[in-house]
Length: 421
Image 1 (cartoon, rainbow, N blue to C red):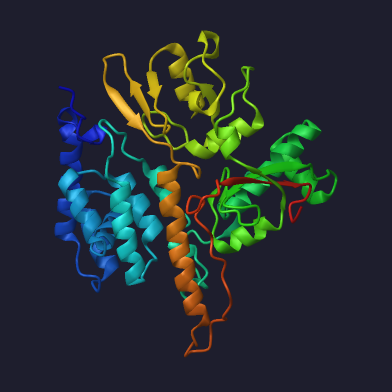
Image 2 (image 1 turned 120 degrees about the vertical axis):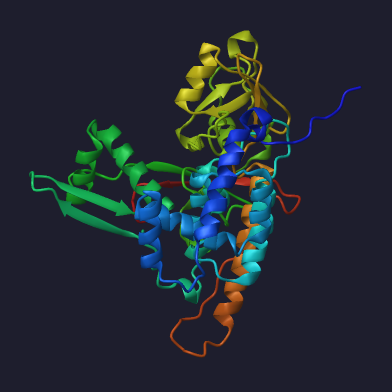
């Protein structure tokens, strides 16, 4: 009699129990040495760094992780039971949630993040740090409510110049993901049009010796007016969504391309958008997290072997995983929901899920979380402020692309200017 295998993450297989044991041991130690929240952080960090021979940065990160997990009991218990999360994944969670202080939101995140980190298939690949960060995007600390008006995060937005003393200057910019994508897209298009480097394209645009090219951006949303996801950057908060909505020039419904087949080897642009919108990232078995926009769109069953050019036979693979599949190192099978089972030469199987805005599991939480925050932020903004220091204002409530009968739509913006289309 055939039985359905019990869901589990691949690294929790008994053959890899050392991984889960190490994860538990790490947290057990750091939990035992993490003081109460009112302890002197400098003294504690310095002392523990000396005891463990770790850097103060690593030590402080571990202390912050333990303090964060105290506020997320469901996630902490789930992680203790399964030994899921290593330091990079815990650090990604801590980085995204460190500024969340609303008890209701913490409770909601605790529940949904635990669900997200619960396997639904046998031999499932554990989401990596990048996937976890994307799941928690946009981070609550970026929501523009009064408490977030003055962001004190160490990686606050800005551009910094540092002279090296060798005739060069290093420029470091920390930007919102959508702004960075905007700049990078325009620079690449300019460099291509002018047959030059990104360096010279930047100088040419700033000095006015080169003209802004036309560029195309792909956004996803429930209708033609409310983008919620920017391909290459991720989910948009309400402020970003309003800004990008002004740049929309036309829309297209994504349901037809999802079921379209073309006779040619190369998929149409509509099919490419459907595949990248479904996958979100590279679908390789290690969950490498490379954005779908930087991936190849590859046939699961090779076109030369009769594989159709249709979304159900196409996948996003980074160049490394694409080459491994082409060499025959890995074989895969994809089901109707876009869940892939990768098979290694020794017969071992790893399962991956789609994570893009058109994949139902990823979209449902990301958008409902945004809606929840938007509703609470709107209440706070309209509530009288006893201090009178924080300005009021409205906020946009983003709709869930799958919460009604209308299919999600891809919104496309074209522009020849950095500032506006």
